Structures are given as C-alpha cells and as structure tokens.
Length: 282
Image 1 (cartoon, one colour):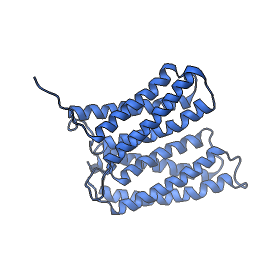
Image 2 (cartoon, helix red, strand yellow):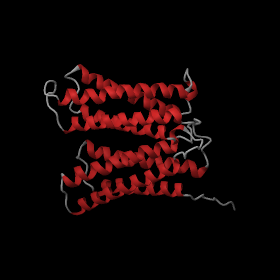
Image 3 (tube, one colour):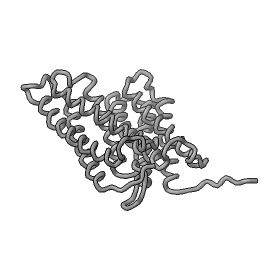
Image 4 (cartoon, one colour):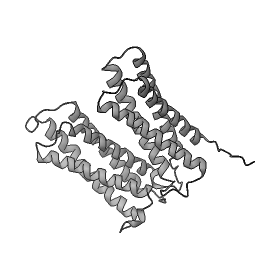
C-alpha cells in the first residue's frame, strides 16, 4: 500500500499556523460576533482573514500535492507574495478590528468574547505570516525569484500603502479643490499601477514580454517613482495644511501625508536595492 510522505519544515508549520489562526479569526466573528450590520470596516476585516486563509490553503495544497510545475504562475514568486500581502492584511485587521469593534462599540458577554478571540488570532496570524516571509525571503548572495528579494517585498508594501492612501483621501474626497492635489492623486495612481504591474509580471512569469530588459525597466521606474513621490511628499502637506490653500484638514489628510512620506522612503530603498541586486526572475 503506497504511503504519502508529508515533508515537514519550519516554513510548512508557519503556513499551517497561519491557516489555523485566520480560520479561527473569521469563524469566531462569523458565528457570534454580531457584525451583520457593522459596515465596511467589518467587511474589510473579514475579507482580510478569509482572503489570507484561502490563499494559504491553496499554497499548502499545491505544495503537499507536488503541483508546483503545473500551476500557471512562478512558484518562486507566488507563495512569498501571498504571504507578504496576507501579513499586511492581517496586521491591518488586527489594528482596525479592536479599535472599531471593541473600543468604540464596547460590546458585552459572548459577543465581546468572540471579538477578543478574533483580535488575538488575527495578531497571531500576522506574526505567522511575518515568520513565513522571513523564512522565504532571499538571503544575501542567493539567486531567487524577484518577489523573494527586498525590492520585490517593497513592491508589495508600496501597493498596500497606496491602497490605504486611496481609502483615506477618497471618502470624502480631499484632493479635488486644487490642481496640485490632483497631481498627488495622479502620482499615487501611476505608481500603484506600475508597481502592481511589476508584481503581476513576476508572479505570472511575463517579464520577458517587455520590450526592454526587465532590470532596465526596474531601474528607470524606480527613479521615476522616487521623483514623483518626492513631489507628492512636498505638495500634499503644503496644500492640505497651509491655511492659504486648505479648506479643512482632519486626521485622514494627516495620515495620508504620513503614508505618502513613508511610501517615498520605500521607493528610495527600492531604488537603492535595485541598483545593486542580482536576481533571476521565475
């Protein structure tokens, strides 16, 4: 009778732990969290846990069944990309969920207990995904897929921060009263689209479809993104907080300014890494 041998490793256990933690997180609130009419923040948190769970389950099944060569993506890039996005998603849920559904709503009894459980396991899931990323990332001098390198992981962080900026400045719209602020929105959109395109090209093994070498494209885009984000980092606070131009500044516009500066630093680090990194895509 044939035996199925399941390989064990730290990476496998990190994925199994993340799978279990995300499952508990969304199961607890789905069963007795009383979030049926709690709005978009509740939907976001449940999406974070469910998406992370589904992607991790997919990665585990492909790995355990040995189907890496049959899936239409680069397996040196896909799992770590999923893990990095899942870490950021679970981290955001771990911050948002207790603030909105424990501090502001102050539930009691069984509902409160289930929400606390979800918060704890969301934090554990974020840690598990961070461990997975740490175990999967390329070591110095190691030949690896682009998404396993520091620039690849930075691309994930850049796109995630851009999504948060979009949410902060779009509800309500805080960039429509001056052309300079519309330029900042254009910077966020252009850099997000190009960074996400790089992620998709690497995961889909389509980097060879570019009309120029991928390394030259990365260098050119990195320099362009740094210059564009530098302008946004300067323009956004000037036209939002200066009384001569600003209508009304609130916590969302301040947060957008901070995240713009943070993303600028990520693009600077990305450019510095890309200038000296040797990698093999796919």
